[in-house]
Image: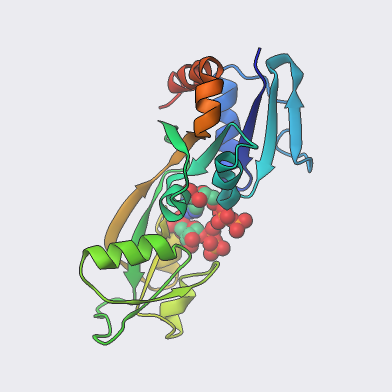
Length: 207
Ligand SMILES: Nc1ncnc2c1ncn2[C@@H]1O[C@H](COP(=O)(O)OP(=O)(O)OP(=O)(O)O)[C@@H](O)[C@H]1O
Ligand SMILES: O=P(O)(O)OC[C@H]1O[C@H](OP(=O)(O)OP(=O)(O)O)[C@H](O)[C@@H]1O
């Protein structure tokens, strides 16, 4: 059996990703969710997992050190890496939206948009013909309109709780997000039987 290296995102997606793999019949170690190990081998399946930051999963896959990986569509849209998207796993669903203080219009001259998705935001505002200044932040994006750093934010919305608790409202729905199975293009060719088998096992578990 060909060896497969799979890049798994730590954090939010991790538990749901483990669950779908288990449902597809992959025997994961009992301590998979608690371990501090960053590389986990499953010799019976000839699989090796590497546990990466969600934003780094496409990097490992693009460079071919992981054959396949699980990544959020937000990360894929933002990074535009050369990877094949094989399957929508329909886990960790949320969406990207613009938001801001209620009843406000954007500053007419160089409106400022705070986001950790500069590429997605730039593309979106270009498409709707708005010239904006992007302010890149790494988290707590909702703070930006509250303290006057930006007119709008472009960020993930899931339950809407963060927006609500910070007195913000959603303006535009930009893109739906869920986690995707991705593959390195060369691995996909060289290990196609193994990867296809994995895709069909997982596809049966997508809800
Ligand atoms: N509120 C949310 N609800 C559901 N899925 C989310 C939510 N926020 C992010 N996601 C999805 O989960 C992925 C990873 O999120 P997570 O917060 O674990 O990573 P991160 O933002 O890199 O975390 P951190 O930098 O805090 O470690 C995102 O790329 C997105 O696809
Ligand atoms: O609609 P909700 O269910 O409230 O979820 C949305 C929030 O979740 C994410 O933040 P995260 O918790 O990853 O923190 P961050 O600010 O560090 O990105 C996202 O950036 C939003 O702030």
